[in-house]
Image 1 (cartoon, rainbow, N blue to C red):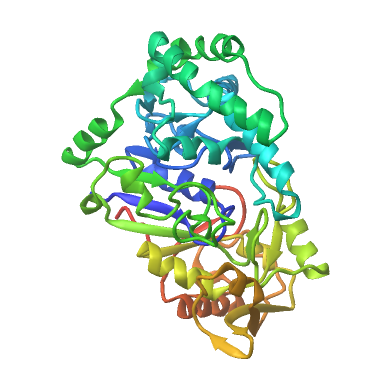
Image 2: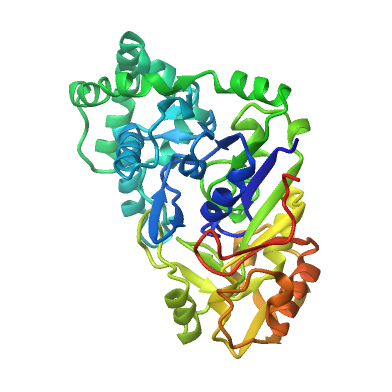
Length: 430
């Protein structure tokens, strides 16, 4: 028996969808424990590309139970649309395979409008949110004024809570953000029908997981975003509003830390970032554009072009420490096939001082200059390689050097977007 957490080891978009899809073969349950539809996991099954925003990637495997935990915030419209699209593709036919925590929080229309209006008002100081209402929903959760799924299922409770919340939200929209207010009726009439559509999926998921742990079932915890976007441990304030690190798997699902056995960090062979915030190795040049083009670096949720840069060993080493990583799944190694020379950041220079660890201050982080080590590229197509030993020598040396720099062994190396384009070094479920 093994229970495994998969987390992003950079700024998100590391390719977690594919890795979760691969590991799902060995799991009984797949649990999403934080975030909302501000994340997108892209999977390639055969020649078909599927993008999921809320539902765990494990849903593509028949007979696996997928759980959306209490730490997730859900937009009912997006959830229902995602289910509809999956069923239309023949990928999800058994409703009993998907459970929603009755304690998760609901994204309301005013959350989305506030999110967008705040970003517009912030101008150059904006965070770079997706405008999906994620942050404002978590604000209400922490402020103890959120609306949970259990509330939505009871029309009397839902009406009461909506009446309580709407005056404050409308005041903020009208008087601070200069946006139009909502009426009670327009929100209630839209959201009340969602209750019956969602009811069949609702469960006490913490109890379900507790029983599965006792029975020795294997559980895979699927994180969204990345370590550097964690609200506590990321590059604050340019972060998301939830706990993206491995610890969030416990608070966002109700499973004890004692029941987590492996933590796998997903990292690209280079690095990307979406939104604002410091990015020491960012390449605002032709090399960065080449990484974006070859790696298809455009947001699965927003379509925004991602910022690109060379691999930053300090960031992944930090992720190893914060998450207690037992292995790394390295993705998109094939994107580097065409480069004659590849750079790796091994340290920072800050006002003439050498740094081996990340500064906690965002202003200092933004002022850091990367110190690079250059490695020779392999200049050949590796997408058909299926064992580590068959990789070109320079590719093997690159991967081994990354292991040394971050202090964590590779568990998997991805050499293409398809399931079969994968080198499994060690299976964390075995």
